[in-house]
Length: 114
Length: 114
Image 1 (tube, each protein chain N blue to C red):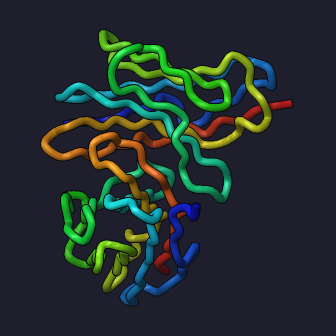
Image 2: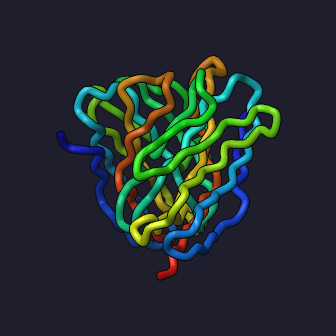
C-alpha cells in the first residue's frame, strides 16, 4: 500500500513568486492535514480536510496561503506571493479517522524562499 | 488549549545506555498523547500512543512511555539504546475539543554514540 506522497521534495523560489505543493494521501483516508515546521521549531498545524471540506483552517498563517482538495483525493497548498518567512518544511498527513490522532505522514516538502 | 514542551532539543547517549526523552503537556480536555519518530529523509511515524486505560504504553522498537496525569508528563524511555535509534523524536497531544487537532512539540534529536 502506497504511503502519503508529497511533491516536490524541495523547492527554491524567490520572494514574490508562487509555489504549489501537492499531497497524495493514503487511499481511502478521508482526513488530510497540512503542517509546517520552521527552522527546527515545533511542527505547527495549518489545516484539516475531511474529504473535500475544510474542517479546521485555524492554523493558516494568512491569505497568501490557499489549500484545496478537489474531489476529496489529493490536496494542494499554494503560497502566493511567497515571503522569506514562509521557508520551512511542509508536511502532509492523512488519517482514516479524525478522532484518534494517529497520523500518517509524508516525507515533507522543503520550501526555501530567497 | 493544548501545548507540548519537550525538554532538551538534543540528547546524546552511549550505545546500550538508557534513553529518556522528556515531554510535558497542557490540555483542557482528557489528552491523547503520542510519540512520533522521524528518521533522516523520512516522514514522521508513530512510535506509540496513549488514549485511555493503562498508563504505561509500549511501542515499537522497544520504546515505552508512561502517562502521569499529576505531573502532566509523558516521557519516552528505552532501556538500551541502539545506533539505529538515532533520529528526531516528537511528542504530541490531541483531544476532542469539538474537533480534533494534534499539537506537536519542537522535537528532540537523539544521538547515539558507539
